[in-house]
Length: 555
Image: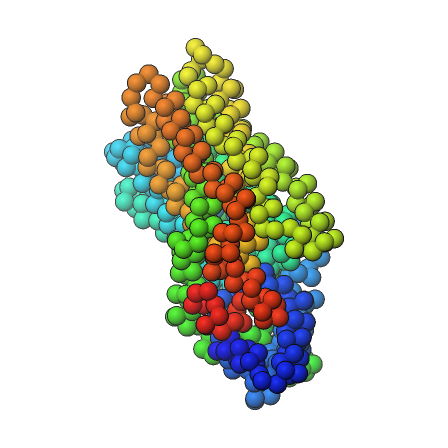
């Protein structure tokens, strides 16, 4: 294994050679930040290597592996700024499209119930199963985008999602819709690929603005669904709920096909190696994927698929922040269900209820604007004083003030949604606006913190975060309306929102614990602590180059 090779070199009894190797590795990692995500299936690739230096890895048969340093100007990091943001804007649309599919469906629940003669609760299974499948789908697609490239995987994902809309729109029975929704959710690559593309084009210290933009697309797509869903429900037949999803998806896929290029570093290195061989510039150079034999191993695939779930269960930082983020996202889907009950008190039509979600969109935009100055300031501080000047816990500082807005918003929404005899309809929407600010802030800050705390393992950490968000949101589709309808009493709507507000208090407490005690908690974390200790001990080597015994868990 590659990691064993490096381990053996570090244990060399000759101190001069040992020192040279460490200097060499330190030089390499100066230009390749440890936080940059290596392809997950390449952990054992360098086991075939006989020697290496800062110019690449050399093999006994005369072949040389091209490295990032050798062709940095060909990678996504070196794209012009306008190309990066053009790609990211299309990815913004892709993410919105996939999340739109998850949130526009509730407006078809009543028409589907009437058309197929099923209960409305049964019709909501289509919403639940899509989101639960989406949660698993994101994790299943992630390793393949690392190995085969972002572009083909996203094209395949979009194609399959679009295909499964057709049987839903033409469904002869409700079972067809359930199957189509399940396959559509499982086919959605979602944030596992879109966030990965930001890491392909920006160094970790520079990607704050890009991550904030992608997070806005994720939460925004969830919210525009009900806005358009209200229009569809009021003016069109239920089939158009799926046809509109298909139209949006096809338009997005076409834009992605023509305007997005490959960004994955290992794929671009392979292409550059082939170009150099073809032109005769360097006939012995090969890309990392070309030299890996065999290309795919079942144990590697299973390892990468299992790691997000392992971190979710075994890392307290990932577990509690993911539950907070998931609960916050579930609130938005609960709102989608509760708005129908709450605003009918004012006699709102489906169209008017859908337009109420504009308050959430405005809240997201305001939250995005709040984070931008902080991202810029922290970026300047890191440039001036280095990363050590900013502990990962600093990423949670803004959230200390934003997170309570979720509880305040829920309590306010609960007791201002009494109906036209008590308040104007705009009042509960003001509190919904506060909930939206908190939801964006929680998603953004938790991702930012996990990236800072877990470095090369951040993809798995944020994967657990995304899994919790989609899974809890899916479950909320089944309990939201029964909870608001069946509590009983005159204030049943208010009691339901009050319960959610009390839960919000509980799930936000860990934010303050992690902010004040984060370094101590990370010191007990096998993942987070090993990263810091081993960088110093092993001259800055990445975790992927440590031996199996040195790693916190099996790689």
